[in-house]
Length: 304
Image (cartoon, rainbow, N blue to C red; front, side, top):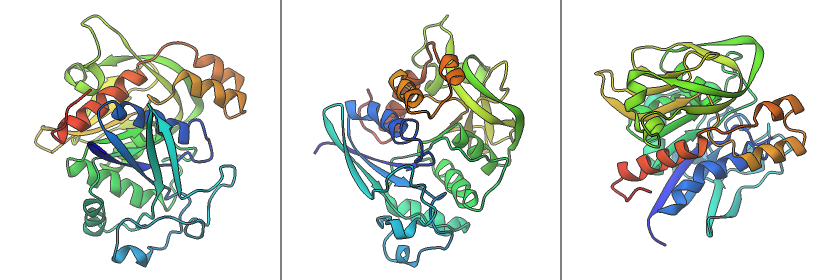
């Protein structure tokens, strides 16, 4: 085995195989061009809200079905699954997450895992309709961002990241689904996650499906982009002194590859109207490649 990258994913769409597990694979795929990958999955929305004492001695404990009493059986439970991607075998392993809101204890748990990147997926839940498991999840996102661990929040993950720093999230009356062009702010035009793949006159587009919107963010979050329907559509965390940290939130879905969308429609996970609205090109794959490149470079490894 060569270079190994350990990625921690808040896996919040397990009941939607193509946008959940399939989306996780699309997020991981660009890393494999330059690194072997191990994926640790946490599912706080399915886990018992009680802090599991087994974590006192070891931060990396396999999640069993017994530890996840809220598991949605639309998606078969597994603790470990090996997936072949880009001619490499990638282990996806579910682990127990501490369901706590103690900053120092959560920080120690994350440090002990020795993670290279943290990613929070989309979810069928809503930040505007708060649930108990969201508090430790938001804390984890805040800690990973503050610690300088490359962090990416997607859709729900974007909203949770913004909320964790004091942003305001509201639910709109209707669902927004489709592909929108982004207007980059001055900071966004200089941000490597969004702009490194663009030529000077290129446009950038994202695929959206959401009802919650981030309405405002505090000074710790810099707005990178806006759209006609979603004013705070991409953000980056700063250290409070204006210096950027490698932590981003994206309201759109960069992991929504065309083959995933097609299968999600065939399996009845998205409506015909949503499927039609998703036809067109977007920059998701390029943005995920940029994220992988930034993660590898932040750890002194060769980029893509």
